[in-house]
Image 1 (cartoon, helix red, strand yellow):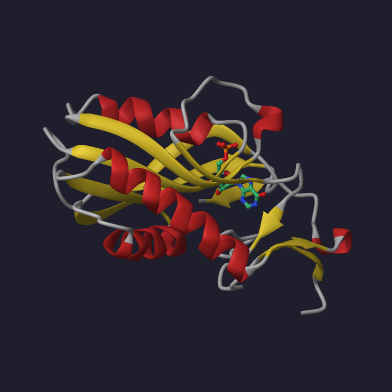
Image 2 (image 1 turned 90 degrees about the horizontal axis):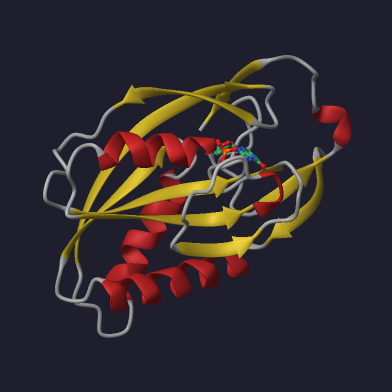
Length: 191
Ligand code: IMP
């Protein structure tokens, strides 16, 4: 695709990272029922792939339940502002459940912090976060990420669920866009 400047993480690298996350989660939740809670839309693919990787993880005895919620936050397209809004809630209560929130990417940490506070107030048995890509350079809040797939360079990336203005989500790899693609307007950062 001509808008792509460089592939940052290939399909094979993403698959290997998800396998590693699944192995760790399978060890930690052995014999338990676990709700994988995907954050739409960005974490759609990572949640689906992680759920299936968990099923085939070596000796896995985790009973996986899937649920999703949707958030959006106002930002300048490259960065969320922390003004996060819940646009779609979970379909089942998480009270008394072991929950792993699945996110595509964590940057300043405000989105994950919002989710942890919101969901933590619903009395889950436990709550952790799994994030495919960690951008640790611009954290504004201290938020624990228990399972990290890969550390992402300090770039705006798209693909594998991540969008720019709702485009590029369906790329099977993670890539950096050419600079001329970006328009300098405030907008909703769809997560
Ligand atoms: P945070 O609140 O800054 O941690 O950002 C989390 C959300 O911002 C993610 O769920 C994404 O929707 C969006 N985001 C952050 N960095 C990127 C990126 O490089 N590409 C696309 N979306 C991003």
